Image (cartoon, rainbow, N blue to C red; front, side, top):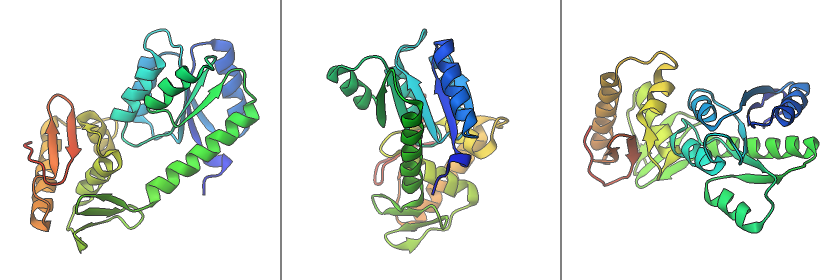
Length: 234
C-alpha cells in the first residue's frame, strides 16, 4: 500500500508560478518531486527515474503534452501513471488526452488536496499492477516472487533476463526502447549496446528451451517487443 511519505512525482509544467505552487505543496507532504518545464526534459527524466506519478501539463513550449505522454508510455522503463493537468475542459480535449495514454485528467484551476488524492489513487493502482501476475501468450510472470513460467512450468532465467522479461511483459503489446532496457540493467552508466544484445540472445535461448521460441521481436531503430510465437532477430 502506497503512503504519502513514499511517493515520487514528476511535475511537468512550464508556468513558473503554477509549478512552484504544486511543488511546494507536494514537498510539504514530504513527497519527492522533480520539475520539468519542457516536454524534452520530461521525457528524459521519465526514462531515468522511477516515478510513481507524472503530472503533465498539456500546453508545453516545445512538445505537445499528448505527444510527451505517448513518448513516456512507449519508452519509459515502467508503466508510470500520467495525470494530465490542463485548462481545456471540452470533452474532445479530454478524449484526446485519454487516447494519448493519460490515466487521469484534472482541469485547472484545481484544489491541491484533490491533486494529492488523485496521485495517491494512481500510485496505488500502479503498485497493484506491478504486483499482480502478468500473462503474455504461454508466459506468466510473478513479479513479487521474481519467477517466470511457460505453460505453467518454471523458466530458468538469469537476474538480468528476468528484469528484461518483466519490462517487456509490463509494456506488452508496446515495444521497449533499447535505452530503457539498458538503463534498467546498468543505470546511468551503461556499457555498449553489444552487452544488451548478449542478454537478449541469452533470454531468447532460455525462452526457446522453455517452449516459447521467437517470443522477443526486434523493432528496428527502437528496441524489442514481446510477442509469443513471432519471429525476431537480435
